[in-house]
Image (cartoon, rainbow, N blue to C red; front, side, top):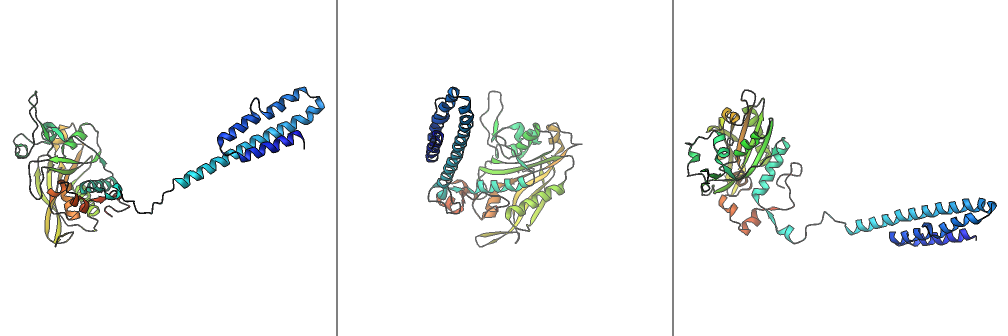
Length: 360
Ligand code: PHE
């Protein structure tokens, strides 16, 4: 065997045996590096006769190419092995039940669950989610919504006022999510299509009222909007939310300073023992207020009511949760009683979606 053949056999053997990329790199330097064995042979070409060089030149170049290729091949083989090992070690069987521990024990509060269900339904209808602060100024909570100083909702009775500030102004805990309408319109050009879920506060306490509760506001502003769209939107929402093909809804004429005309909506249901059935029976529970946005409200945010109109609604999230999941007392929602939370709470892994099922 010639010197070249011996060297090649040696190198190939070492390359095939290299255990990892670092060992392979050592081999590459030892063969092809500046002081490597192949490089040394290349240098010796200079001292050869032309005839010898004619034979040895191509032979050495061939050796260099084959060794470079062998190193490359070994390198990708090693990478494949490493990937296979990683895939095997990080394997997760998603069909296995969860292990005991926080994931199994923890519960999603019905309010969070229902809020996510509502967001999933309205997102599907093209609404996005907006937010506003819990501590509001009177301008956003009342004035801009056309609620005059003399309106009963502004009396101390219902509203929690913060201490008066140096400038004589009082902040309030927002009494509804409607101020988010104003905030959104103040900084957006129409068209607008939003919902705004969040906490609201009123001084009230009995089986169906707590001083803090949850609403979701809806607002649509565009060049052509009407009550029919509002009604359709709410009916579609209720069917999707209660996961039934028919719901009984009652639109009663009502009054809100910030909508004209205005309506309140009740949901028809039956109580069968401890259960609540939606879409049957003749009991009614009020779940929302709604109407066409009042022209004065549009003017207050700088919109021209001759060009833009819209509709708005405000729903009680807690009421919706009570109806859907048959929870009779609202006060229990906020007692943090672990037994209640375990019974009515939702699994962490059940994320509501329209395709996967809202409450399954
Ligand atoms: N903000 C009203 C309430 O809290 C509900 C509502 C919202 C009514 C939007 C009409 C339009 O009772």
